[in-house]
Image (cartoon, rainbow over all chains, first blue to last red; front, side, top):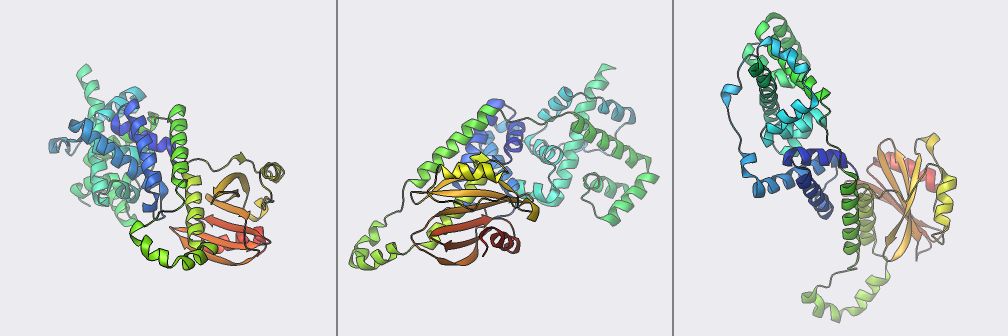
Length: 159
Length: 244
């Protein structure tokens, strides 16, 4: 099945649970099949992603409302970052990065997954998520800033 | 470029989404401003941490199999009802039964077209592109011979840029059809063929739901060629395969 791993990866990151990702992917592929009349050519991958995403969000709305709440913490969106931490980040192991990413709100996780793992362009991310291209950029910016903060804080508290 | 603008455009710059002029201005600013240069470094560090982390989850094989099975089941149940009866209009139609008979006798090209395009889309979606995945015509051709009472066009056109990738059996209106699968770059081309009730029909081409198709009947065999490939290249392919 086309894009199956990519679809699973997105569902897995959005639901943060293997069992729930299974359910979401299964439901989304059946929906994709049922509604393929709604597919007017173009990018099948983006179309499939948007179905996966919508299925995930209906699922999250039903089961985990707190995941959807966005924390608009503008103090986190500061100007600078101290320098030695950037170097520590490079050594962050897979497990640490995975945990840090899982802690982010869903809207940050999804843009990071689509951009960093699936290599989608801003235009494609905008198509999948239904947000403006400018918003894709600012959301990625806040997501990376937040991820960075999650990754450096444990190192700081150790010293 | 100011610090504020640099911060706004930093991620677009890193993701290569920024236009050339702004990218150059941003790089110039990074060169002159240590504060923004530090932001750039920390963003790069986050990106490389994500890249090095091997964060992607792979779909479990059991799930893949479960979804495939479910899709196949729903494909089968979709195919069962051959047509829907509009009961409200039934009375009116009863009076015009003769017309209906005539319509039934004529091959309904639109319906066939929908079935063929749907089958093409399903073959891409359900991961059921091929029953016999082979680039070797001497493998694919005999495989069909045991299953059909006619011989579909199976020939590898790799030198011309249309490699053979495999074949499978589909069903249209209750009778088996061959689906020979070719490829042009990343575009999949399905060549459907089955025994027709007509002896010949002129070549026709069109577009349906974003897919191009060419159809014709020759020597009692009906051919439908469907792909998301552009119409010109598809026509070139049809000339190659069907010689028309």
